[in-house]
Length: 515
Image 1 (cartoon, rainbow, N blue to C red):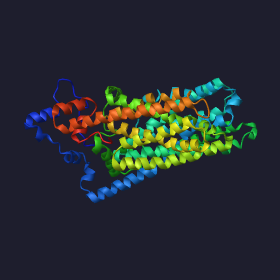
Image 2: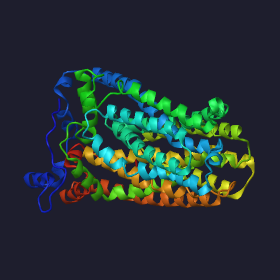
Image 3: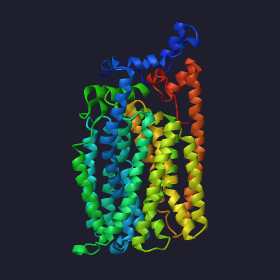
Image 4: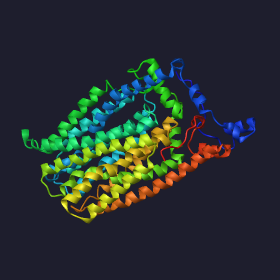
């Protein structure tokens, strides 16, 4: 099935690349133009070579439709549950958990932030491990059952120390899901399709937030049933639903394209070729070690720019951790506060689809991210400058999509610009999410001073400006790398290869796109 030739992923110092050898053999720079189409055709599996192009296109459409109907609903539901289980502590605050457990404002902030202490570092080993697991679906669903049980157990805590301990454990197990899901989707979908699928996860997240707020408002009416407080029922019911879904999906979630039982042998060949034809070896076809992939990720300077940008973006996205608290600053009661959290999330879901559709259609992320940052900055200024309920709720309607939206496009950049080797992509995705996510720990202590939340919104405004500046620097860098790839000069091409592009990607005519 795999017709690929083993290629080096690094260029040893002092040794000529195959491009330099090609120059010597052909004698002129102009004669080294790579016939990209012939390179890609040479990778077409034998099972597909005799199929007419119109039939092959029809097979692709049917394959993508099957993937969307089987893979995406499972990942989407799991992400809704992942986010609800992670964020329901904020809804529990509105329902009275602080009074019942005798928590101070600082203790509650610690209970929120402690989840990230476990969540962030464990993403890296988990994502490195998933590249070597032949059944990632079973791995993800098994962890889903475990974190659901831990979340349900939160309903039994009786004090601050118990709450902190169980939240730390929840973070460790939930670390498997998000970076693992992004990596998993990038193993199935090429660049042109990946953006909308990542956006789909965030759309699921926003509808999960909206449903979570409405569900929490409904559960509040169970307060006192069977002698159990409403916030305890919230954890018990949501955690139990997560365990049930994880157990069911463990039998339904496909594995990688090369070994998926839901696909026929020809469909497997087509699914693998769709990924290989864009940037080289796909999952299950590379021999790169986990540690080598991790090392390559650390040595790529682009990774550190992406980490910094994600940190600035995660700072802005931290508002999701305290959204019911910020909405409560409008001065309404507990039930209405929870109900009012739903419309901004639903609106954000529709906006995410539009943003990702535009990004995929125009093959760009730079301009959409700058527009989102500009909108977010305006909303931060409104929140800082007035206590008018109408103006503040307008800002809150726009903040979920404008502050979190750039993350959708950034994950598309990560999985496209750090695509190969696959172990490097997995490590990079986890490192960006883990290190960048540390911003959530610090921001957990910033949402004080209701209703203006001056420290929080002032910090978010500064982070947005820093994000835009770094994004522009990154754009200049990758466009400069493209110029070197287009130059035909073997020395310049070798420089780009040393900085993270594999020789196979160059042979396929790969370029840094989206900017």
